[in-house]
Length: 307
Image (cartoon, rainbow, N blue to C red; front, side):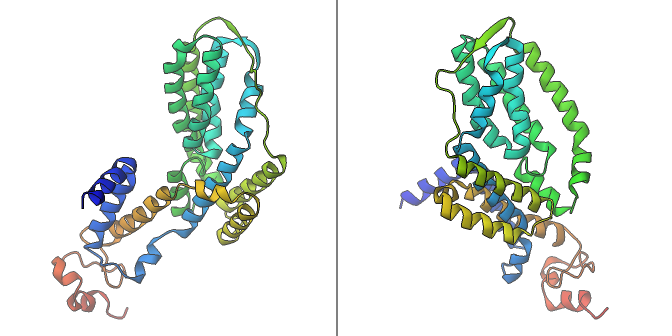
């Protein structure tokens, strides 16, 4: 009997955002009881795009692409502030394409390795803090930078040009800010960076496949490729090339979005949050009625008469 509460407590601690989203969805279900109509609340396009992006980016990371690029950028004798700036800007720019989480998972250990090799572990705290800030600021620039952006991009039917135009000024200001902070807190002097075991691409054939799949993901984000086709292509390609990548998808994040879709849809439409009938969803106001009447035949007669 004690195992179930313990398991639930562990789940809440591991997935606090999912837990809150699930609680909100359960509360919203008190206003609109669950029904097959709930399926219409879920944005399958966003979920499929997130699934494909997470699986493909996991493949790119597994091939060592990001570490190879980072090592080639930093190898040699360079000013220490320039190295600190590079370590901070790496997650800033890569998060625009591979999400802020992946950028930090990749480049925070890399920064620890580089600064430890040159004997400047005293810079670890400022550099890692700035990397975290940079990854979150850089990821806001594109629809694929983080899941929230992808949802907003799809929900408001923005074009890529409109989205980039909205975020470009903030991105440029953020770039100037994190660059200035990196140069100020990045130390002084010159250092020589070399890697005793240079990173190498693992599986050039698979890397080419992942890059093609990533390009297809971007085409689908821009609405140039239907998302069902993309999802089918990604699943089949990964099943043939690397099935383990499908297990690296953050399914808890996908479930969090499902709960969020249900809650946000009801919050926006259902009285007392919105002003539409919870039965017909016609948009005719019924918020003046007490709640029991809103979900009864009285509400239906008042809201759902023929136009």
